[in-house]
Image (cartoon, rainbow, N blue to C red):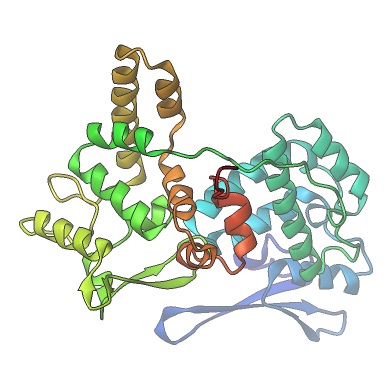
Length: 349
C-alpha cells in the first residue's frame, strides 16, 4: 500500500485532507472519507465534525478526545474565546482552568445537574463558582451545536449561589481626600469617569476624536453598546465639555490622541491607573490616620476606582437618566446594583 501523505498522517484511516490556496492568500481546507470502492465522501471543513462523521461511516465510537471534556474545552479555547472581548477572554481562561481540575477527564454525557450542583457547593469562592458554571453552560451549548452531545445542558436549572451586590458609596469626604492626593492625570480620569458614568476600561480608551457634533461618542467595551453624551446643554458648554476642554489644553503639547495620558503623553493603561490610584488612596488614608479620623481612613481604604460609576448613578436624581448614562437597557439593574444611597425623605416635623 502506498504510504499516506505527511499532511494526512494525523488523521484516522481512510480520512484525507485537501487544501487549496485561495485568492488573497487564504487556504481552503476540506476533509473526505474514501470508502472501499474508492469513492470520496465529503466530511466538511471542520475537523472535529469530520471525525464524528468518519466514526459513523466506520460504525465506530466517537474519538475518545471528543467524548471527554478536555477535547471540548480545548476546542472552546481555540474557536470561541478568541472572539470575545479581551477582559472576557482573560476571565474565561481563568474559569476554564478551574473547571478543568474536575471535569477534564469526564465524559461529556456523564455530567448531570447533580454533578454541577456538587461543584457549586464544593467551591469556597461562591461568586466565582457562579461565573464558572455560566461559562461551563456555554461550553455545553457549543458542544451541542458541534454535535458532540445530544443531551440537555446539565447546567440548566441548577441554582446559583446567592450574590450580594457591592453597596459601597464614596461620599464627598472620601472623594475629596483621594482627589486631593491624586496627580493630574488621575484627577482627569476620576472626573471623566464620574461625569460620563463609564467603566474604567472605557474611560482609558476615550480619545479626543471621539468628540463629534456636540457629543462624546462612547462604545462600551463590555456590552458593545453605543452612547452619545452631550458636551453642550441649553446652548452652553456643560461640565463634561469644560473638562474635555481643560484636558485638551493640558495635552496640547503632547503627541497623543487619547484623553487620559501620562505627563510624557503615553496612553494610560489599567496598570498605570491602578498604581496611581493605590498611591493616592494610601496617601489619603495615611493623612486621615494622622488626623485621628479612623472612620474616614477605613472608608478611604475601601474606595475603589470602579466605585466612581455607581457614585455617578447614585447622584443623578432621575433613575431613567442614570440608566441611560450607564448604558443599561433596564432601570432595575441601575436601581438594584448601582444606586447606593437611600431615598430622599422629609423629617416628621
